[in-house]
Image 1: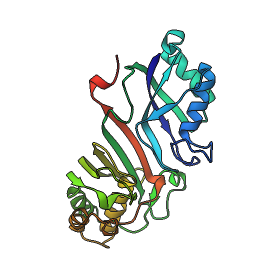
Image 2: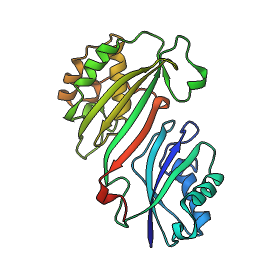
Image 3: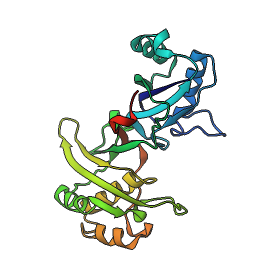
Length: 258
C-alpha cells in the first residue's frame, strides 16, 4: 500500500462544495475520486484538509489518498500530473503529488491554514471578478477594519463566528495573523487570515463583521463583545462564498513525507 499527498487548485463556482455528497456528483472530491479511480483501476477515496462550501475556491487545498499502485514508479510526477489534469475539468487542477507516510492525514495533521477573502471595491463591480470576489460599492474605513481585526488575533472562543449551532467540539482557535491590503490595479481589498484552524463559515463571518465595521454599522470594539458573548447573533453577517479562497495548508515536517 502506498500513500500520496496532493495539492489542488480549483474555482468552486459551479460545484456543490468540496465534500462528496449522496445527492449530487457535482463536488470537487467526487470529480477527483472519479478520475483517480479510473487512472489507477481501483476505488480511490481522497481525504481533504477541510471542506470548502459551494462557490468557495482554493489555491492550495491538500488531500491524501492510499493506493495499491506505486504511482511514482510507473509515472514521473510531471507525467502523472499531465495525464491527471487532462481528464479533470478545466476549473480543477492538481498541482503537485508526492509520496507520504501511510500515517499522514491531510486534515488531522494540518498545523496552519491561510484563507483569503477578496472584496471588489470598484464603483460598479468588475464583471470579470464576479465569481471570485464580493462587490461592496460603498467606501470602507480600512483603518477601522484593521483595528477590529486586531481584536481577533490570538487564542479565543470563536463560537460567535461559527454557523454550526449544534457543534459539540471545542470552538477555541488561534489566529496568528490578519492582513488587510489593497490591490489597486484590480480595485480589490484583500483580507488574509492565518490560524491553526477555522470553524464552519468562520472566515466568512469574520469578514462580514469587518465589512460592517468598515461601513460604520458597528464599532471595532464590538469584536470583543462578540468573542466574549459566544453567541452567533453578536457577530456580523456571513459574507458570500465567492470571495473566499483557501490559500495554503502547512504541516510539520514529520507529517509530510517518508
